[in-house]
Image 1: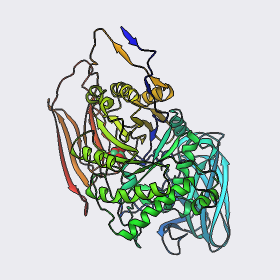
Image 2 (image 1 turned 90 degrees about the horizontal axis):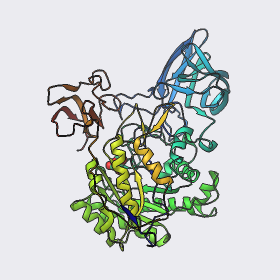
Image 3 (image 1 turned 90 degrees about the vertical axis):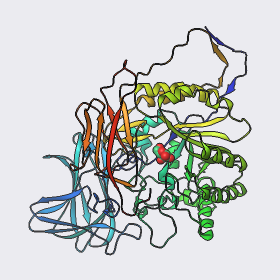
Image 4 (image 1 turned 45 degrees about the vertical axis):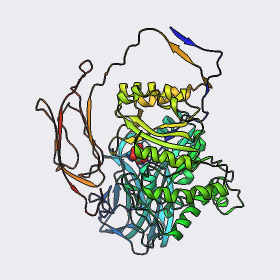
Length: 619
Ligand code: AHR
């Protein structure tokens, strides 16, 4: 018998409770939400970052009679932030050029849709560039760009696709002589809400369908891990995320080698994030570093003058979001096409910084924000754990600092989620509120989704203290996986929501105003462990895995991979093995798909890993 007290006041549900955690992880931006179809459009990939990369990653020759020589040059570049470009030399009769492979299987085009081609070019003599998208011998789109003699200039054209493909190649052919090319871009006209430089429509729609009340960005570890000092003359290629680098013309945004081990174009920058949040009807919730790394790395910024500049940059961000058009940064927002303030309400300071330096640096940022923008809600954090000495210290620090919210992150198994429904019942109602900024049960099965649904009933019941909650991570490209589980999976032209996605959607779209007290009398039946697979994982960003073997107790080899083939291999039918490019593995998981429903219990697995530290890496 279920009794619901309809006369009670109940708990008011936070109006912002359900939101999304967006991070550029698993190629969530380039090759994902960012609708750009050309990979390495600015030739900034570099083997210094990743041995498998070169400036010509995703590019190859395309010869039509003449001979092409492709080289990456930095002589008289497009600008100081975009130092490399393609130098194409064409000799002989006919034309020749360069072909881009796009992401996943190739470049997807849809029959009847319009696509915008743009590139920067420099030639000594005038000459036409023929741009096509082809797959095999079929040409799906053609455009001609008439390059004038002289220095760098931008050229644009568009075409309507004559057919549908998910495996196209973008080919740029030039006449004889030297042509310098940079920022070679192909963009679908049909982006989410028709935004220029916008979001891939199907992925954005899946996110919009969640009806998120907030959009946390740009991460995660991507937001606060990188080499300090952010203001050094010779910037490291793996830089801490700086919002000012990510606004303005895309050709002036530098590329960065991000925490997750791949190049990030910053094509989606802070302006696009704010715009996207607005298009979703969600609050923008940026998370910034306070000059301390997190996520297992710590290279704090201690130089006081530089820290003061970093604090100023953070205040400038608030002005960029909310300032009037007469203010310095409000006017930049207006120049970018958004005179109206974005109405920023929340700001996150730090992500999982369980280091002493966090306690030193955080107040400098929080105090400055309180002084200039007392209405902004400041979010501190509690590391990546659901309990323990650091968790307690971080929470106590947040209370002492009078933070408005504390960002909790935890990834646990289904048993934990089922057992901890009452976690927030006993939280102090007078201290900071909870931002459950990252959580997921470890897996993407129906059972995981069910455990999360059960847990969310406890979150909702306590949403007087849990103000915001977001599953993490949001997006994963099936061919570039750094982290599982994820909410939405996609390749170059398809996407689907995991079972956890449907739980988020269900809760977020059906949120009530109040939760009434209820009680249940009768036989309680435990939720059985119906997981159909056992997962094992290894994760270390500083390690190169040379050989990995996973063996079940009965001697069956589930996985044996020496990476000689470049990507993971597994015994067919026994599960999946996720690696990212080449031998550098950040997230490695193997599932024993033979473990079936109805046969719960312990099994023994052996995971044997031969690994070596990447030169210079910590950890
Ligand atoms: O969500 C994936 C990662 O988990 C985030 O980048 C980080 O904040 C956490 O460790």
